[in-house]
Length: 283
Image (cartoon, rainbow, N blue to C red; front, top):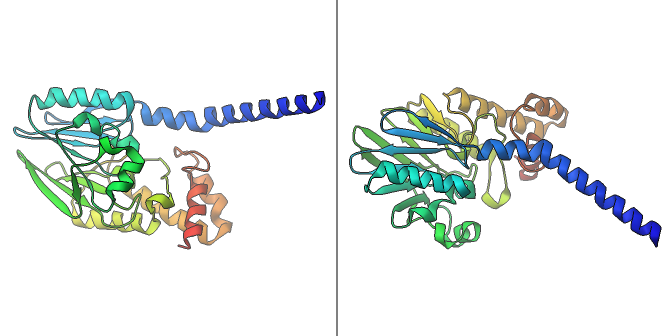
């Protein structure tokens, strides 16, 4: 019996050490990158706050304030205080690019304001994922075009299954800027899950659609640094690569090596996980 207990103890210790190593090597760096915030004063009317969950934009006009995504945890509270100061009593329009908690957990702080999200989710699904207090006030099936002083914001539902079944993007025409949500990431591997109907072909269709529809010069990805069209080009190439590797296993090792510098978590959000997911879809 003593030997059995010693064996169990050693096994538990090995599991704890392995789990700690996995967290330290893979999870913590990604978690730190996602949660660390940085304030980017883009111009006198537009402020971008990266990290703390999904990247956020705050656009101020004389009569309305636009907020793209509401972050999570302490970053959501800090964001709300910043927006409240900038709004100075003006009404606020919040846009959720998609349903995931790192983009919507701050919604309850904006109670009484208008919150728009993709209309291809059901209320029941949203509540299951995030709770009733974070529910949007408006479900967007198509497009909203809203003037913000000398700027025009086009808020549109992709209406394809991409990152989720109801991704929304925001385009600012004067600035030629696109807020892409998690359909567009900068050097971070996408998370693809059947629960949210993730679809590689939907991603590729989205990249094609937005670049044809809009004159995009600046991209604010859901996660990662702000950049230009090279971010979409890299994402397009990524999906071509993982689709190719899913169909031809001999290409898999080269694809994994090609993207080893992208932020990723094995089994959850990694090229390997994406390749296996696409194989299961039969794409």
